[in-house]
Amino acid sequence: MSRLLASILLAAMSLACPATANADSDFRLLRIEGHTVKWGPPILGKGATITYAVVTGPSAIAGSVNCLRTAGIGGVLKRSHVTRKLFDRELAGAIEMWQSSADLHFVASKSLREADIVFAAEADSAGIAFADVALDRSTAGSVTRLKRGIVCLNPAVQWSAAPDRGYDSATKRTGLVSYRLRYTLAHEIGHVLGLDHPGPNGELMSFEYGQKRDGLGQGDIAGITLLYGRRSDIPVLALNGKSAPAR
Image (cartoon, rainbow, N blue to C red):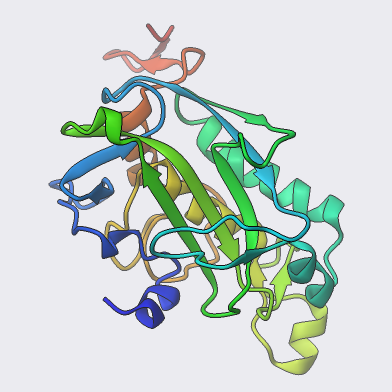
């Protein structure tokens, strides 16, 4: 798969190795070099604490497949007239989609070098958005731990923080498509958490750019909970249809 095609599909995490889909194709786990990948203990169903940071200035951070040249997020914000406050709000909303559905805990890091996941601009200004991950080779088993993730956005694209199905007043007047920050960030975060594209549509992680979705689909939730388990405070639906405490 070419990088150009990958940009159209939002993220090219399946470049390294094709994944095997779930039987109902509602989710697909990311597989790299034959390994299922995740943060935290390299055991399916075990939760993780993940640190993250936003690149604001010059950056030497680079991925191995995507996000090969990164830069501060300022270029993304300036061209689209999005304030840093709005960007942080959309990033927090994207993170919360995943954090509220599985045993995941995201913590902001003051250090780019120490952050597990960094958010940046794509200095080459290609495509829409990309994700890249690096493996912890010391845990290379059937399930392998991740040690670094990058999400990068194309600053040449028109971005919007408005919850209005992907368009804002400025782009409606000019006829340009405005891509939703929260949707795109959530999709790319799904990749760096260990999920691939399950199919063309129907889920947040689907490869067609369905910006009308405002949250995770059932397949997205099934995939992320397979990787990290359920949040302990999410009720489990009992056989009688009543909620029972999660165990």
